Amino acid sequence: DAKGKAKVVLFNIPVFPSLAPLANAFATRLKSVCPNCSQARVDVGATSIATTLPGRVVSYLQQNPDVRYVVMGFGDMAIGVPESLSAASLSSNVKLVTQSGERLNYQYLKNGQQAVEGATPFGFYSWKLMDTTARLMLGTSVAPDHAQLMPTQLLTRKDITFDLNQPWPGVPNYQAAFKKLWGV
Image 1 (cartoon, rainbow, N blue to C red):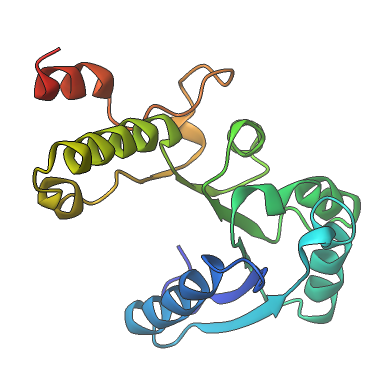
Image 2 (cartoon, rainbow, N blue to C red; image 1 turned 180 degrees about the vertical axis):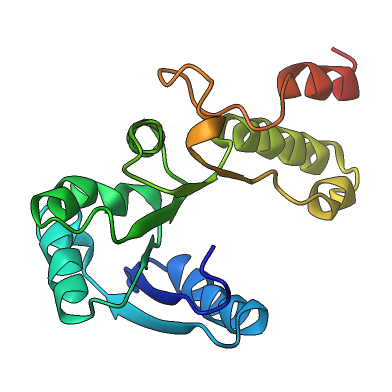
Protein backbone atom coordinates (compact mmCIF):
# COMPACT_ATOMS: atom_id res chain seq x y z
CA ASP A 1 0.00 0.00 0.00
CA ALA A 2 2.79 2.45 0.89
CA LYS A 3 5.22 1.00 -1.64
CA GLY A 4 7.78 0.29 1.08
CA LYS A 5 8.00 3.81 2.48
CA ALA A 6 5.32 3.94 5.16
CA LYS A 7 5.45 6.35 8.05
CA VAL A 8 3.75 4.64 10.96
CA VAL A 9 2.89 5.52 14.54
CA LEU A 10 1.85 2.93 17.12
CA PHE A 11 -0.18 4.11 20.10
CA ASN A 12 0.28 1.73 23.00
CA ILE A 13 -0.64 1.37 26.66
CA PRO A 14 2.50 -0.03 28.32
CA VAL A 15 0.86 -0.77 31.69
CA PHE A 16 -1.06 -3.61 30.06
CA PRO A 17 1.43 -6.52 30.23
CA SER A 18 0.28 -8.14 26.99
CA LEU A 19 0.86 -4.96 24.98
CA ALA A 20 4.61 -4.59 25.59
CA PRO A 21 5.48 -7.76 23.63
CA LEU A 22 2.96 -6.76 20.97
CA ALA A 23 4.56 -3.34 20.54
CA ASN A 24 8.04 -4.83 20.39
CA ALA A 25 6.99 -7.53 17.93
CA PHE A 26 5.26 -4.95 15.75
CA ALA A 27 8.38 -2.78 15.63
CA THR A 28 10.64 -5.75 14.85
CA ARG A 29 8.35 -7.16 12.18
CA LEU A 30 7.75 -3.82 10.48
CA LYS A 31 11.50 -3.23 10.31
CA SER A 32 12.09 -6.69 8.80
CA VAL A 33 9.35 -6.45 6.13
CA CYS A 34 9.75 -2.76 5.40
CA PRO A 35 13.31 -1.56 6.11
CA ASN A 36 12.59 1.84 4.52
CA CYS A 37 9.52 2.45 6.65
CA SER A 38 9.78 4.79 9.59
CA GLN A 39 7.98 4.17 12.82
CA ALA A 40 7.32 5.86 16.11
CA ARG A 41 5.65 4.74 19.30
CA VAL A 42 3.50 6.86 21.58
CA ASP A 43 2.74 5.42 25.00
CA VAL A 44 -0.49 6.59 26.58
CA GLY A 45 -2.38 5.84 29.77
CA ALA A 46 -5.34 3.50 30.01
CA THR A 47 -7.62 6.32 31.13
CA SER A 48 -6.98 8.13 27.84
CA ILE A 49 -9.20 5.67 25.93
CA ALA A 50 -12.24 7.52 24.56
CA THR A 51 -11.20 10.65 26.47
CA THR A 52 -7.90 12.32 25.59
CA LEU A 53 -6.49 9.70 23.20
CA PRO A 54 -8.42 10.88 20.10
CA GLY A 55 -7.03 14.41 20.63
CA ARG A 56 -3.52 13.05 21.18
CA VAL A 57 -3.73 11.21 17.87
CA VAL A 58 -4.84 14.37 16.08
CA SER A 59 -2.09 16.43 17.76
CA TYR A 60 0.55 13.86 16.82
CA LEU A 61 -0.58 13.86 13.20
CA GLN A 62 -0.66 17.65 13.05
CA GLN A 63 2.92 17.70 14.32
CA ASN A 64 3.93 14.84 11.99
CA PRO A 65 1.91 15.42 8.80
CA ASP A 66 3.82 12.80 6.82
CA VAL A 67 2.54 9.91 9.00
CA ARG A 68 -0.05 7.93 7.07
CA TYR A 69 -0.68 4.91 9.31
CA VAL A 70 -1.97 5.00 12.88
CA VAL A 71 -1.85 1.65 14.66
CA MET A 72 -3.58 1.09 17.99
CA GLY A 73 -2.53 -1.57 20.50
CA PHE A 74 -6.10 -2.90 20.56
CA GLY A 75 -9.51 -2.04 19.15
CA ASP A 76 -11.04 -0.04 22.01
CA MET A 77 -8.19 2.44 21.76
CA ALA A 78 -9.79 3.67 18.52
CA ILE A 79 -12.99 4.85 20.24
CA GLY A 80 -13.54 8.40 19.03
CA VAL A 81 -10.42 8.51 16.87
CA PRO A 82 -12.18 8.42 13.46
CA GLU A 83 -14.53 11.17 14.55
CA SER A 84 -11.61 13.31 15.77
CA LEU A 85 -9.67 12.70 12.55
CA SER A 86 -12.71 13.78 10.54
CA ALA A 87 -13.23 16.92 12.65
CA ALA A 88 -9.58 17.86 12.06
CA SER A 89 -9.88 17.11 8.29
CA LEU A 90 -7.25 14.37 8.61
CA SER A 91 -9.33 11.26 7.89
CA SER A 92 -8.47 11.15 4.18
CA ASN A 93 -4.73 11.33 4.95
CA VAL A 94 -4.47 8.51 7.49
CA LYS A 95 -5.26 4.81 7.68
CA LEU A 96 -6.32 3.52 11.08
CA VAL A 97 -5.36 -0.04 12.07
CA THR A 98 -6.32 -1.94 15.23
CA GLN A 99 -6.38 -5.51 16.47
CA SER A 100 -8.63 -7.48 18.79
CA GLY A 101 -11.44 -5.06 18.16
CA GLU A 102 -15.14 -5.61 18.40
CA ARG A 103 -18.41 -4.29 17.00
CA LEU A 104 -17.40 -0.62 16.93
CA ASN A 105 -14.22 -1.41 14.99
CA TYR A 106 -16.22 -3.48 12.50
CA GLN A 107 -18.63 -0.56 12.14
CA TYR A 108 -15.68 1.78 11.56
CA LEU A 109 -14.48 -0.61 8.83
CA LYS A 110 -17.91 -0.77 7.24
CA ASN A 111 -18.13 3.04 7.28
CA GLY A 112 -14.65 3.43 5.78
CA GLN A 113 -13.34 5.07 8.96
CA GLN A 114 -10.84 2.31 9.74
CA ALA A 115 -8.62 0.55 7.21
CA VAL A 116 -7.74 -2.77 8.87
CA GLU A 117 -8.75 -4.83 11.89
CA GLY A 118 -6.64 -7.75 13.11
CA ALA A 119 -9.75 -9.71 14.08
CA THR A 120 -9.74 -12.01 17.08
CA PRO A 121 -12.38 -14.75 17.40
CA PHE A 122 -13.18 -14.41 21.10
CA GLY A 123 -15.82 -17.17 21.02
CA PHE A 124 -13.30 -19.60 19.53
CA TYR A 125 -10.85 -18.70 22.31
CA SER A 126 -13.42 -19.71 24.91
CA TRP A 127 -13.92 -23.11 23.31
CA LYS A 128 -10.17 -23.59 23.01
CA LEU A 129 -9.78 -22.74 26.69
CA MET A 130 -12.44 -25.34 27.53
CA ASP A 131 -10.55 -27.89 25.43
CA THR A 132 -7.26 -27.16 27.19
CA THR A 133 -8.92 -27.29 30.62
CA ALA A 134 -10.58 -30.62 29.82
CA ARG A 135 -7.24 -32.03 28.65
CA LEU A 136 -5.56 -30.93 31.87
CA MET A 137 -8.36 -32.38 34.02
CA LEU A 138 -8.15 -35.71 32.16
CA GLY A 139 -4.37 -35.80 32.38
CA THR A 140 -3.98 -35.90 28.61
CA SER A 141 -1.54 -33.92 26.55
CA VAL A 142 -2.23 -30.27 25.87
CA ALA A 143 0.25 -30.40 22.99
CA PRO A 144 -2.57 -30.21 20.40
CA ASP A 145 -3.72 -26.95 21.95
CA HIS A 146 -0.22 -25.49 21.94
CA ALA A 147 0.56 -26.66 18.41
CA GLN A 148 -2.18 -24.61 16.78
CA LEU A 149 -1.91 -20.95 16.00
CA MET A 150 -4.94 -18.97 16.99
CA PRO A 151 -7.01 -17.92 13.98
CA THR A 152 -6.59 -14.28 13.09
CA GLN A 153 -7.58 -12.45 9.95
CA LEU A 154 -6.86 -8.97 8.73
CA LEU A 155 -10.31 -7.63 7.95
CA THR A 156 -10.93 -4.73 5.60
CA ARG A 157 -14.13 -3.01 4.56
CA LYS A 158 -15.00 -5.71 2.01
CA ASP A 159 -14.87 -8.40 4.72
CA ILE A 160 -17.66 -6.90 6.80
CA THR A 161 -20.37 -9.21 5.55
CA PHE A 162 -21.34 -10.73 8.90
CA ASP A 163 -23.92 -9.54 11.42
CA LEU A 164 -22.27 -6.78 13.46
CA ASN A 165 -24.45 -7.74 16.43
CA GLN A 166 -22.56 -11.02 16.62
CA PRO A 167 -18.84 -11.44 17.33
CA TRP A 168 -16.60 -12.21 14.37
CA PRO A 169 -16.72 -16.03 14.21
CA GLY A 170 -13.21 -16.62 12.89
CA VAL A 171 -13.33 -20.30 12.02
CA PRO A 172 -16.76 -21.16 10.58
CA ASN A 173 -18.60 -23.86 12.57
CA TYR A 174 -15.83 -24.13 15.16
CA GLN A 175 -18.34 -25.32 17.78
CA ALA A 176 -19.20 -28.39 15.67
CA ALA A 177 -15.50 -29.14 15.17
CA PHE A 178 -14.86 -29.08 18.94
CA LYS A 179 -17.95 -31.24 19.61
CA LYS A 180 -16.72 -33.78 17.07
CA LEU A 181 -13.28 -33.77 18.71
CA TRP A 182 -14.91 -34.36 22.11
CA GLY A 183 -17.29 -37.03 20.81
CA VAL A 184 -20.31 -35.02 21.93
